[in-house]
Image 1: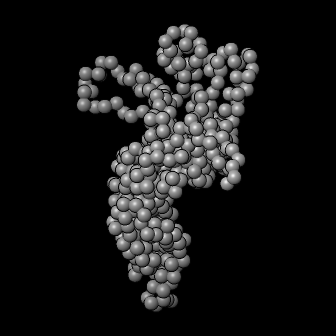
Image 2: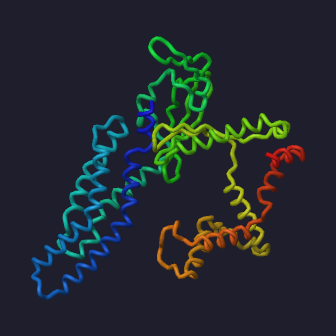
Image 3: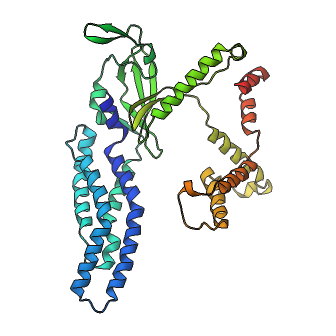
Length: 378
C-alpha cells in the first residue's frame, strides 16, 4: 500500500515539469554567458574559424554538463518498465521526445546564433506537460491499479491506529485488531490540487462503512508535522488534567499526520475550515469596494475593479525598496537579509491591517455572546 501511495504522490509528468521549470532560468543564464564568450572568441583575429568552433564547442559542453547530468538522472528515474496505465501513457507520449531533446541539447550548436534554440525542445515539452497538468482529477485505476482493486485489508485507518494493541505470540508480535477501523477500499476519483507540489486528495472507505478523506502530500518531510501533532496531544492531556483548564473545556484541535516515507505522507482532511488568508482577502475586498466612488458605480458596468494585491506582492513591494536603502541591490538569499529590515517591513504591514480583524470574524460567526466568549477563550 505504501509503495502504491508513493507512486501516486508525484506522477512522472509532475516530476519532469518541475525539473524543467527549475532548470529553465539556470539554462538561460548559462546561454547568456556562452553568447558573451562566443562574441569574445569571434573577435580574436589570431584564431582560425575551425579553432573558434572548437573552443566554443568545448565551452558549451563544459558549461552545460551539470544540466545534462540533471536531465539524464531524471530520465533514468522515469525509464524503468512502466507499472501502471498512466506510466505507460507517459512512456509512449514523452519518452522518445525527451531522449531526442537531451541528445540534441548535448550536441554543441554550430553557430552562436543557434544558442537561443538549444532549450526550445524542452520548453515545448514543458508547455505540453503544463497543459496536461491542468486536469483536476485522475482515476486511481490509472495511477495505482492495485489500490483500486483493494476490497479489504488489515491496515488500520491512518490516525485511528492508536487503538491497535500488540500481544506476544509464538510467531513474535501479533496485532490485535478487534474493533479497529481498517482500510476497506479506495474511491476511484483522485482530486489533484492546483498548488505547486500537486498534492492528491484521496477518499478511503473504512471497515465501519464511513468515508475518510486524506491529503497525499509529497516532496516534503512530514515527520516534523507528525511530531508537532504529538506535542499538541500531550498539551491536551495536560489541559484535561488541570482543574483550571478542564472546567473551561480548553483544548487544541489537531489532525492526523502519517508519514509514509521521508518525502511523503497522508494528512487528515479537515472539512468546513476557513483559512486566515480568506479572512484577510475578504477584508481587502471590502476596503476596495468602500473606496470606489459611489457616483461612478453606474458608469463602470463593463470595468471590473482591479484585483486586490496578493500578500506576497505587498511584502516584496516593501522589502525590495527597504533592501535597496541598505545598499542591497542584487538578489541574495532571504536568510541573508538584515534582521532589522525584515522586522521593519513586518511592522509596516501589520499597521495596515486592523488589529481586530480575527476578533470581528469570530464575533460574526458566533450564535451569541456565550459562544463568542467560548471561542475567544479557546
